[in-house]
Length: 403
Ligand code: ASP
Ligand code: MG
Image 1: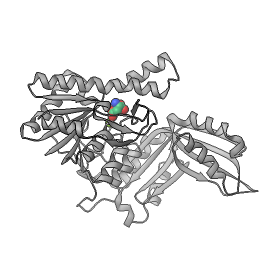
Image 2 (image 1 turned 120 degrees about the horizontal axis):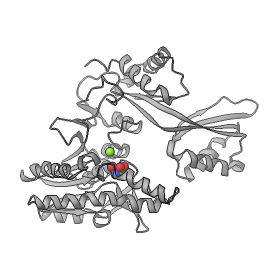
Image 3 (image 1 turned 180 degrees about the vertical axis):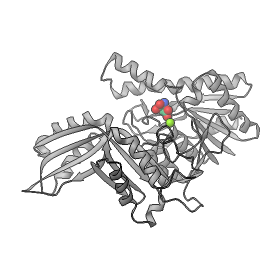
């Protein structure tokens, strides 16, 4: 079997943990499997590097940020290779250039386009454990890129797809995917299985356990994922196309505090207004999330939308700079907001989930600022201070508290 194993930052935070990772890999290697290991930067290394950058220059260029952040993963793979060597197992570390992991050119948020597999396959044929840097790629300018925070998961899934691996295991510091963040909801429970679609929504909406693009890729290429703890031997959660058991209406509750609401007031109520606004943002590579368009009055309308918090200032600047072209009266930014979502494939065949969600927020006296839904999800935008209360209330009303 060819197994891709990805270990996150906490799993390689220090010498003991690195040895622990190596031992877990060696167990499977000794059974005759080929092992490809994807590693994140050690512990909080990526955060430390970001702070160092901001200290030198509050507005570092994204290219140089990628140049800096890729050193984190390069450190962990080299150290792991040395640990394998000390344990007497042949291993080799490879970075994005050595593998050749091609991405789009956007720094700090690149997408993987193609992975060359020759080098890895060659090393595996030599019976080596291959350790690959997560999170990084190279672009057409011959520069390093990174895949966005948490991107090592995506590296692992993409490698599993490219190498046609038999298994892709994502090792982390929790023992699987939970119905809610256990730090916020004390009755949260581990799920044995979850569908790609549910996981995708949960990941996108703030359940920090998997990078959302990794789930997208897994679904696209049919890579079955297992999320499990690097510190225990618990079974973990399997992420796949369909789950066998009759499901609860809702499989999870997630929240995301890294968001901001932008309101554009007094746009003309004619065709093209929304296009010009969102086109300007798209040109600047800024993703828009929830969108609310008001009913038109006197030939005018308002549009409000949310963006990832880190991009709020950029988005404001883009809209200000294109004021002439877009044509609007007023622009405002609201921070301190957060999204709370309930996700579940069971929603498709059961009406009333949205109503129940709104009822539960009403009972908790929480005001809803924006709403968006999909076939398997209801998301509300609320005051950031109410998030924990909302999460617990939703978890309870949808029956997730009981096992
Ligand atoms: N080291 C990167 C981060 O902290 C990538 C990852 O861990 O997946 O975001
Ligand atoms: Mg992660």
